Length: 70
Image (cartoon, rainbow, N blue to C red; front, side):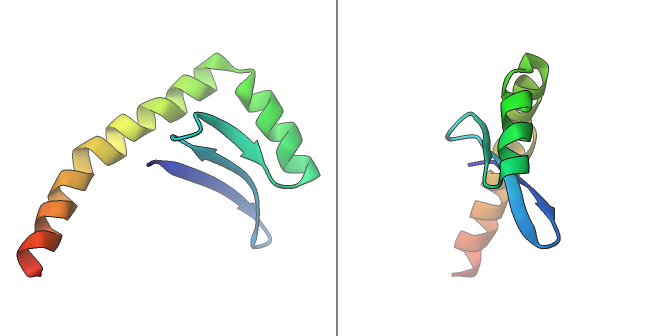
């Protein structure tokens, strides 16, 4: 699962989760940002593509390294 969180003053106000497939807001400001970002198809497709870049390329190596150490 790919998660990108946005914080301000140690408070998470917006999060993108690849399992949900959209941005979720946790504060009033975060909900406005999430609504705007969810209406932007290029922003959503960019975040979905980040899962391909980070998770699918790096997880197998980390998983293999963890199994060899245990």
